[in-house]
Amino acid sequence: MIGKGKLDALDAYKLAVDGFRMYGWKDLGLDQNKRGINSFFESETEKWEVLIGFFSDSEFEIRCRSIWKLNKDSKTFGEKLIQKVNVSEPRFDFILNNNGSFEVKTTNQIPHEDGFMDLIRASVIDNIDAYESYSSLFRNLPNETKFKSNYQELNYVEELTPTSSLK
Image (cartoon, rainbow, N blue to C red; front, side):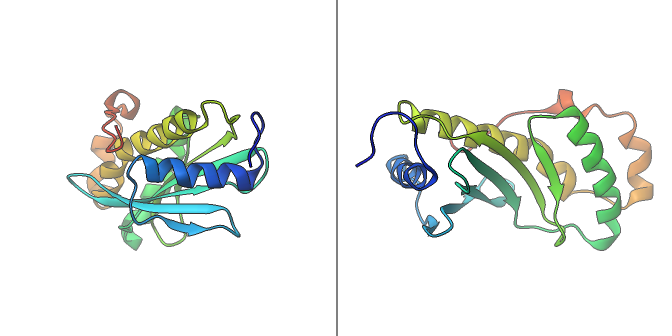
């Protein structure tokens, strides 16, 4: 039985699995040995996966990762754009992984049991909002020369429009 107060990684993982099932998440991919959860989500324009890992007794990690991948021509320019986005959004780590998938990663402290799922759910929603805010920009990234002239005029921070499918 889990006592009130501080949770270790395994207890936090188990509470999160139960909590997400209570919220109606279906088809959870679970790995108790690695204390990882993943699930697929869908908006009107795309599908992505959410990965949640409790890798240490003090922190958990959330990643939203695209199913689509950037082509080789767009990847170099996408990496430059990622650097600029990371400067303007310090709460998140925006990544183009080696496969060309777009990811948004956050790492947070494991909350105490009291209010645990509210804090985990809020963290997941924040991560999904950040992912959705920039995903279409990267998914529709045209070739570098066509995009350069428009890129300098845009302020991406002001264009954030949170539209999470978890709300």
